[in-house]
Length: 88
Image 1 (tube, helix red, strand yellow):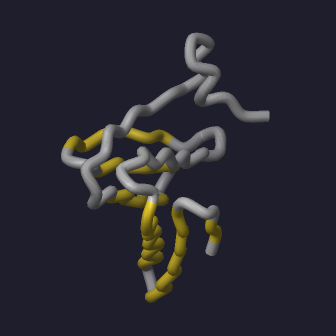
Image 2 (tube, rainbow, N blue to C red):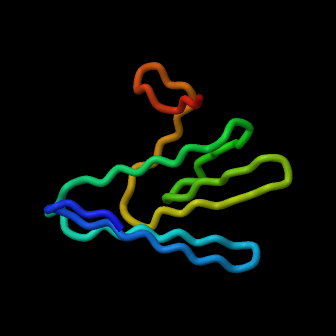
C-alpha cells in the first residue's frame, strides 16, 4: 500500500495453480493520471492484443496481462526518444 495526501494505492496478489492475479487499485487523485510500468527480462516477447491486453512469452512460458481501466498501452524496446525499454 502506498499513499500521498492526494491518492492511495493498494495492490493485491492472488495465486492459484497456473495463475497469478495482481490487482492494483488507486483511490482519490481527483482526476489525476496514473502511470504504471512493467519491465520484462531480456528474452521475453511482449505483443499487444488490443483492448488493454498484452501477451508475454518466452520459450514455452506464456502470460496474459489485462488492464481493465481505460488505459493507453505502449511497448518500448530500447527507445532513445523516450528513455524507456532499457535494462541493465
